[in-house]
Image (cartoon, rainbow, N blue to C red; front, side):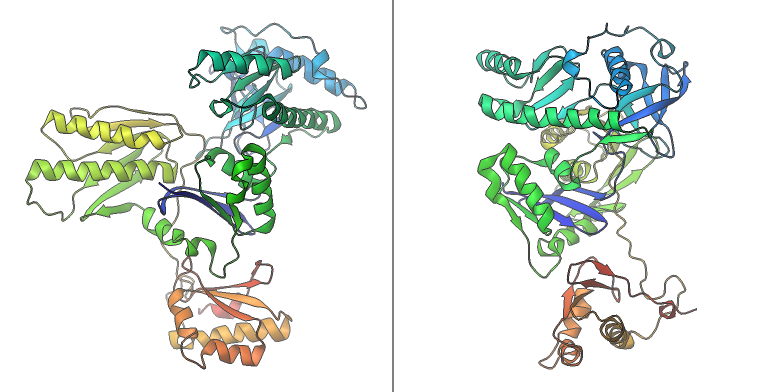
Length: 524
């Protein structure tokens, strides 16, 4: 199986796609200015106590206050609270964490009123992004995740991943980590650290320690509250950290700066794989070149076809996700039971992909086609379980109920990915009236004339639907050639699959979008 990561960096957002055998299996899209992402650390004030929930609400700058439960404070909350006061008491000289005295752990059966007060400053980390009407969910247990280890300030123990089975290797890693871990820090050793040398582990330890020092320095130097004190240096690096696997063969990026940052990160965690990071310089949009745009448009939406006329219907509700399996016009020559089994097995394959692709979390209920044989129902359950083994998110699958329903729970840390595949009319703008389509090229020429002669832009890229691009490029003396003869050779026409028919976008030489919409474009 070949695996590739494709990163599309635009001015306002970054999209990352994971392909397995050229098939899209994971897709993430985030604005560049995204806030309240998992892992961000804030110093904020407690706004309201909720004794009934044994929790409190914390103002982190979001429209809805963030939720912090008593059990999420962490056993070392008292140590954090005292150290925070010590740091802020001296704005000139930083009080080192190694000198801080560890405080007693909080009572597991205690109440929120015993631990925090309204107006108290707390150091918190986002563990769940805002979803629907809910604000972010927080934890008081701060952690810094690296490739090999996770650093825990005020942690009091060193843990090794349970997936490392060798007792000798576990003991070796514990001894190595203990020798390089400063006082008042704990460490979780990740599975990929198996067999690594002390130099590699120590190098990452120093990087994570610097992140902690940067956080606490920012807490000391700033007085505004709430204050973001830590976030990932780049959205692309943050996204790829969770996705990266040493088996990947290629990582393509269409932005030089982000390509350099990703290559630097890969060099740090897997030096032998640095060569797989490549900058894409083709004229076509990067997602079009790798046939991702087409797959996105066919893989999202309410109805998903998966072959032989069968399809899934996916509904997103407040409480859960509901999936219905339909056989459609599938041929019935094999008998009802066999056709039901084949349809359900195909649905299990597609559904496992859809869960990863849309990042659907929470409760998922699937209504499969009824099957009479117990061995067929067991085969379906095993098929679904096998397909979900590739999923990085924690999940649990139950066998089919007596009503033929399969219940799945999947870890939810961010809203489900939803891509609107319906295209809005780019020509009527909702009025229901459009200009004659034969005059579309005349409209484009008017825009080009304004761009060149009024704004002085000599080199630009005109993105249009592939059908329109084919018409503009048709013939030896094409429309494009006529434009180049009149306005210069800086006129470039690029087909883009993401655009609707008769929709267009202008980009400058730096690939920044140029807004050429005018009030006269809309017919009233």
